Image 1 (cartoon, rainbow, N blue to C red):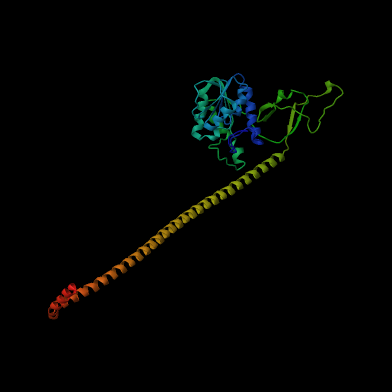
Image 2 (tube, rainbow, N blue to C red):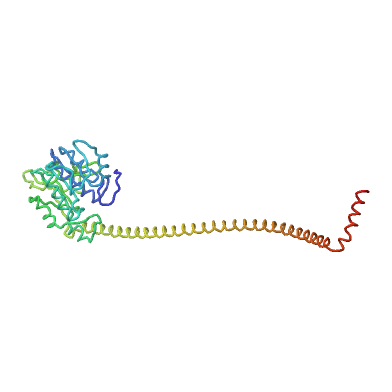
Length: 368
């Protein structure tokens, strides 16, 4: 299994279904052109295709713009003279002129802006040897998007056939067109081992690679019989039939549209959950701010209470000191009054008359 995250767009080995059919088949188809050649896999992604081509080519180099993807491909498929992976853009390839014989680029062009698409084709022409070839694929916008009312968020500029032809023809005027489509067929094939390679080829793709598809017994036997071998008429190696209404294809298309509808509903639900999550985070921030405000208020109240208690203690101490001072002042005032009375008495005429007598009493008291 890959350690890269599956986004729904970049194919990873181990994926199943229509996507696996399409991606494995393209690389299996390209293998016939790369034997003994120097191959560039432009926008190699996870690296499985570069490794598949490298098993038959003289050398294979995978280029991808995403550094973690390049690191993954290097770790998984190795790095050496025969196969290697390099970080770089298809619009500016990190390769010298005329350094490869075959350029393979599957489902890449639509991921580039329109201006970069012509740069990519010019880069392919630059790095390609004079007698080299390009094997390239692109979704048919008429069927891929228009007919299905489908928008792929990863595609920047999709192409109709005429657009694709004009894009390629400037650098590569000789074009051999092929078509690819996953469909449901009824198949009848001849029981002649190896004969299917004469008129057609069949491959079995998996996470381990691509191998020849070994034809097994069918659900039904269809036999042409005659009295002698010479009487047997020629029969095709493979015969395919699809019903005129393409009922199985329509059923698959219906299922695909239903999947897209459910996927849209899921995205809408996820968006709703994201909005709810954002609202919850907003409420949590408000609660945190409220709690912080309450904590600050409580701290200030506690500080005020401590200050009040301290003030009360200081007030009580001041009251005690004031009471002591007032008592002392009252005592001193009484003493002052007594002294004032004594002074007043001593200043009176009566005092002067009594003074000799008081002195006599004092002297007698000392004698006795």
